[in-house]
Image (cartoon, rainbow, N blue to C red; front, side, top):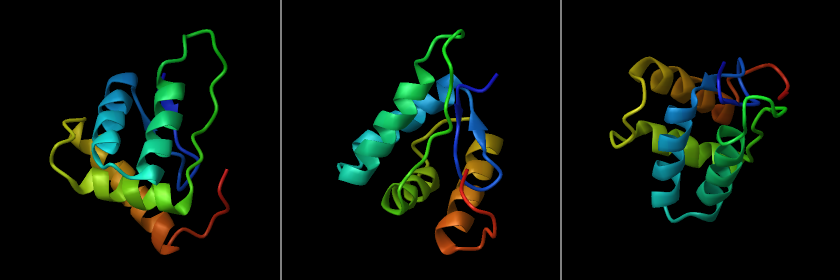
Length: 102
């Protein structure tokens, strides 16, 4: 089961390890929107197996920070997960995604 599912695109998911790595990268950005995104992701990633999970909803600014963070080579997450999440976030930021957010 994925630790974090995002509320954009096709609702991409990441496991706990990748989510916590992403949190580190976002916190290194020294940006308010990135910090807020990191806090939301970390909150979901640290939930126990019996706790209810919610999709992580991010502002446009936070999504832009996420795209930039995913484009950096510092995140050592699963390459397929990184690529998929980056494509989904980038498409959503550009308005290429025609579905409403979840």
